[in-house]
Amino acid sequence: MRKLLLTLPFLPSTAFAQAQAGWGSVGQQEEKGFSWTAPLWPDFWMAWTPATLAVFVGIFSAIALIGVLEGFKYRDGIERRGVLGLTTTLGDRLFITLLGSAYIFLAWLGLVGQPVWIPLFLSIGWGIFVFWKV
Image (tube, rainbow, N blue to C red; front, side):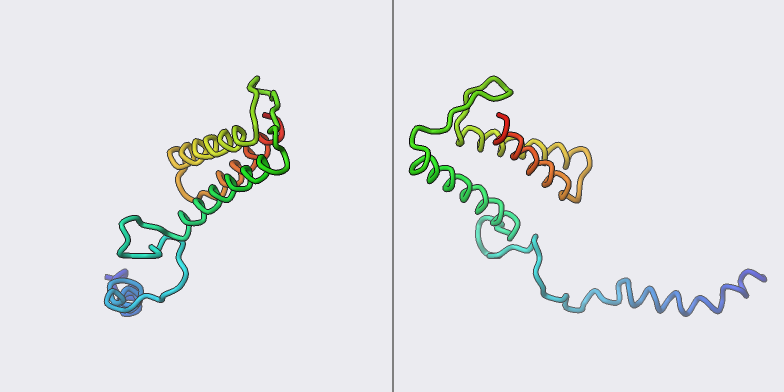
């Protein structure tokens, strides 16, 4: 009985807190702001989010940069035999970087999950290593 008397003063505040943070806010509008996961074009057949758009723009920009470098500055290509024992050009090293980055992200998501900032930095390090040594 004594425990009940001690908890009675706290019951109204608990119910008030649950109403404010719980189901009491279900019908209210959410704040509209920037979201990396919100679709850019909701009625489009593919769910383009700012994150997927940034990834694809980055990949195609890297391919364009490699194409311009190979087309104008390094006409014969930069072939090099690296630590893997392969003779690679700039395009080959870009492909190895993208493939390795995909595996880094997939392994991270499978083993750890979110957030993905650490595999991003690991992938950048992998890209630097590949262009430097492979």
